[in-house]
Image 1 (tube, rainbow, N blue to C red):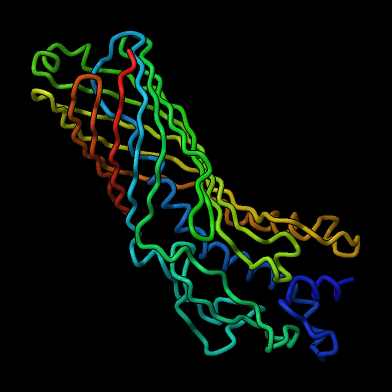
Image 2: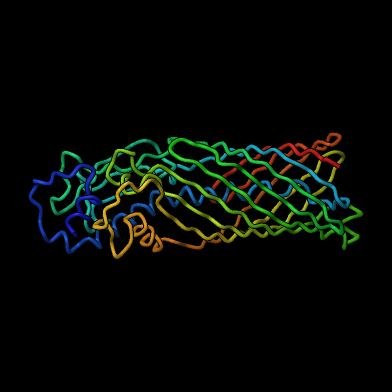
Length: 340
């Protein structure tokens, strides 16, 4: 049974006649740990970046709105990927079971990196060196364009409901989708000095869900046959922000301070086309088993982000240009239409 698991899990194309060290069967746990280690380094920069993309553009104005005022907005984000997040250094010493086929170290792409691939084999002669495992490719982009829709509805008394939605959007070797809801409250209505000087102060809380996925193995590879076609990052973020703005004629200049708390979860997805009972590990299908192991890299992160924007009002149209920055830089241009 263990030999059959090794056969399907460790090989892109295993030569069954090849002689291997039986001691390898005692180190399957090391193999699982190696896969989890690589997955974490490959996908984490992309999920971190997704938080920045979903954080921007929630508030287009800090002003108190009239009751039942509704708007709809169209956004275009341009996200700049730092070089440090497009690649990472992998060494044979990082692994317990696997190893780099040619050399002891190599700089390889994350999910945000280029299409460079290296060959991975193992230390126990199970994987046929003629058919090594190839590392997955990145999206090979230095800039990511991210469109989404937004909406708002004033409830009166300075409270406004905020909505954000991005349908499933394909990117090279993957896709993403985002949706969220928030509540904004105008504070300056209670401070006469601010109102008299056309200074607006608001606070908002929002919750967004982001799903981002990248190709992990080619559909012809044995890993893909076990349902490891894609690696998915599921992110749930709570964001707290304060915005202050100054009005001048038809312009509103705004600064924002954002803090979000994000929970990151990961899983493999794809068609599991193996039906044999002998391929179960601890009673689980291989995909389910690996997804259990990926819980080791679940995490919670806190991000502090700053945002600056300028909004120009023309009749019922609001044109906003903003930039969010700290670890990453994300720019956003949006057009909002006031329905009533």
